[in-house]
Image (cartoon, rainbow over all chains, first blue to last red; front, top):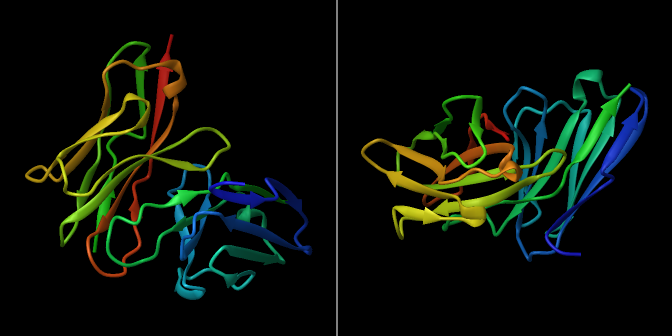
Length: 115
Length: 114
């Protein structure tokens, strides 16, 4: 595997389910991000981790719970979601949050549908 | 604080025509600037980046962008559009120095007509 991978690619869940999204980067990066992309809305930054430490929580509801066990893996645990949470969830990584351009590399996303 | 404005949520061109996607930014310090492309049901892919080395930046797939400080712009161009260029394009800015997260524009959908 190369780059940033995300699993599953598609997920349908009921409002009472618990599921997790997984992201893995094979680039040796130290920063990882979760974004939410809804139709007709700008890209929304949700969480940022740098060297496994959370540095940003962009006022995300507690029904979304991130986990970063190491610099290569990032999870998003989901529980009691609402239909408006249906969206494409994108994971990204960058070298870190320090100097330099630190361009981001994105995974293909998980298309989440909440029924 | 930084911000990005992409003028036009949709741009429509004919195959073979010039592509011009506009991006204006604001940043309190010299910025790094990026263009990303997103094809349907995929993640964002870096097209090119500006890092102050040269004002005209060449990217993948024949795209290029020019940094104009006086106009605070970083417009994306391609001389001749292909059908395969149809996608969503995002401009992003990240201030140089410090632990900053990039800010993305709202995106411009490029439509290419045969």
